[in-house]
Image 1 (cartoon, one colour):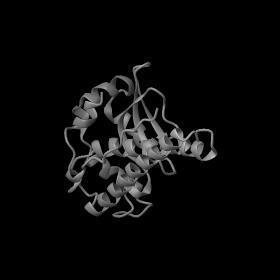
Image 2 (cartoon, rainbow, N blue to C red; image 1 turned 90 degrees about the horizontal axis):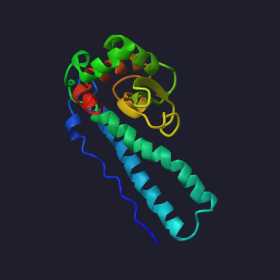
Image 3 (tube, one colour; image 1 turned 135 degrees about the vertical axis):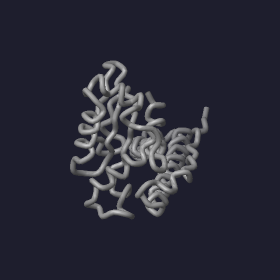
Length: 198
C-alpha cells in the first residue's frame, strides 16, 4: 500500500513588510530561504515515499534522505515559529504579557528571563535561541540550537523562537552586528503570539 505525504504549504508572510529597522529586502531574502525549505521538504517526502513503495528502504540513499528529513522539516517549522512571533513594531507589552507573568515565577521577573535569553542568543556560532516550555517540570528553558535537527528538548513546546543564522540580518547589517539585530528582533516581537503559545 502506498500513501501520499501531506505537502507543506508556504505561509503568506507579506504582513511582515515594514518591520521596525529590519528591512523589507532582508525579509524578502529570508522568506525566499524559508520557501526553499518548504520546497525541499516536499520533494524529500515525495522521494522517500516513492523509494519505500519501490522496496528501497534498505538503501544508503533512502537512509541518508531520512537523516536529512529532520533538517528540512525543522527548517520549515522553526522559520514559521520565528515569523509568526514577529509583527511590525511589535504587539503587546512583553513585561505585561501572560508570558512575562509565567516566566517571572521561575526567573524572578521578565528582565531576568530576557537576560538569560540574550545570554543564550549572544553565544558564538549560528543557530537558534528558543524559549521552550517543559510541561513535565512546569518550567521554561532557554536553549541554544546549533542545527535545525539537533538539540531540541523532546516533548517541550517552543514559545519564543529567534533565528540566529546570519541570513536573518546580513542584508541590512554586517555579520558582526548581532547585538543590533537582537534589539531589532525584540522591537518587533508579537507578545500576543507568544502568549498564544502558552
